[in-house]
Length: 485
Image (cartoon, one colour):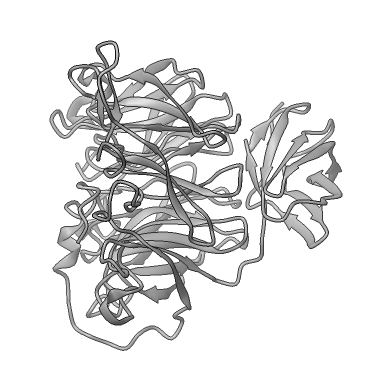
């Protein structure tokens, strides 16, 4: 098994020892296509498994980072097309420059910013103490620049989630600290100015939570929401809300119910549906395999599904990565273990909690389709794309596509803006677009490429769905666009 991301498997090993009985595959299994097999030991030009989720960039391709590999064996930025062509775009690490070491060994993925650039962080490199760096990368020309160096433990000792850009233009991320048991939230401006946004365990008994692992999401009210893996009233993790001014409110403390049937140790971020509720997962408790939950903005939590409730864990065990919201309102995710072959699953769940196992990994001889899924994303072409940490032709993991019957759609950068603001609309086959509307109000726009449109939020527009009319039909956004006052 490839060990490119050292924190992934170790944190979910308890799920592996759950019931191992065999059973028939789910009747809802989908056809999975293996597009690329990674190879960590095939030379410096070979591509290793990307960290966590890939991100769709403005050029239409998918980008991510790898923990190792590349010219200096210290990590890379990789590009993967939806057709399965993978290439290294930049090799991280290298010689010391002016007393500083370039960043190396990233643990998280990339953020697609409104300006067309990709932002990320590394776990090592920077100052002599090697606490990591933040960087910006331009896919056009493969231009790389180190933005800042993390100094000391005040900022946490390792990035635990990809950055996300809020409507104020700043990028926010989480950093864990297993030494102090705390962790932080950081803020980075697009030009690279670094700020400590919040330090966890600031309250007695860590009532505000500790060690955030999942990423942040901006809610419809403009505030940021996230989870911590530990701390809270029961030391089992929390869901929190934090304002742009840094005022944090703990909305829910896990293991609040007898037997921890509400789950514990949430290690992924949240997603907000168009119904206003948040959806997320926990990696433990329930009956041992983790849970899926929904939570109102006020903090009322409902457990939608408990993994491994049946002998042999046919529904999977140990959910990883944040849930993905589809345009139809359903959600998709993956588990690291369980399924028909105990090698992980891909699943779909409705807002009411009906779960369908879409695919059980390692269903092919020698796990040619991959095992231990680690990342999943929904492309605007309507297909799911993901990675596995092991299996494939070289036994170092795979890149795959999974068709689930969704139609193409468009996504928005940003989802919050005032009238007169220019935004980017990402999609597929946008050439020849003839109309763009914001909740029914027409907008001025220009087609940048087959995968991107620039549009101006029209005066009089209201919060709602954005639609793009193309020669192939009308494409709707996978969520509401929020018009700021």
